[in-house]
Image (tube, rainbow, N blue to C red; front, side):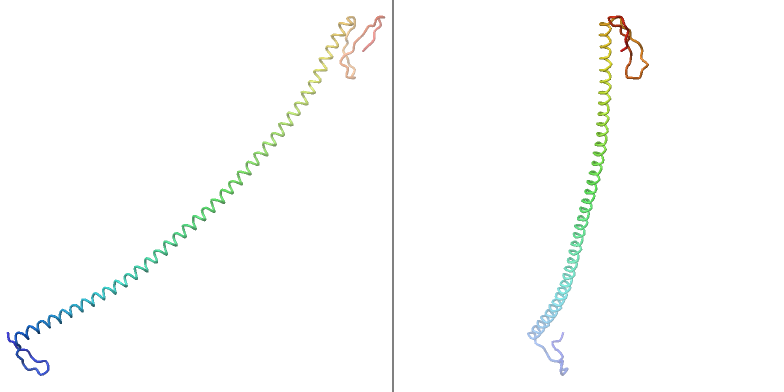
Length: 181
């Protein structure tokens, strides 16, 4: 290998010494390294820009996800509120219906109780009337027995007279005269 280089301006061959050669090689290496570092720096910067854009997109997506979750929560809360309102309405309607049924049942019971009390009063009146009639008949029989004992010669006759008398008696007095009672 020759230790010459061509001048970029005039094109003439120039001899290079070993020291100069090492300096040039070092300078070329440094230049290539700087070039590579700059390229790597540009790539890193480009990667940072891409990452920054991706982070912004991620933030936007997370914001949208948060908004969607909030909307879902609001919708859930609204649905729960509507369900609670509907449940309250149903409970109120059921309560009113049960009150109405209870009221009707009470009215029916009151009506039946009133009818039963009327029947009881009617039965009491009939019993009282029957009892008075029975008492009257018993007293009448007692009187007849006493009269038979007191007046054994008197005769009882069937009555066809509608005066409320159930029988007529033929009574013979002490003078042996007959009279009706």
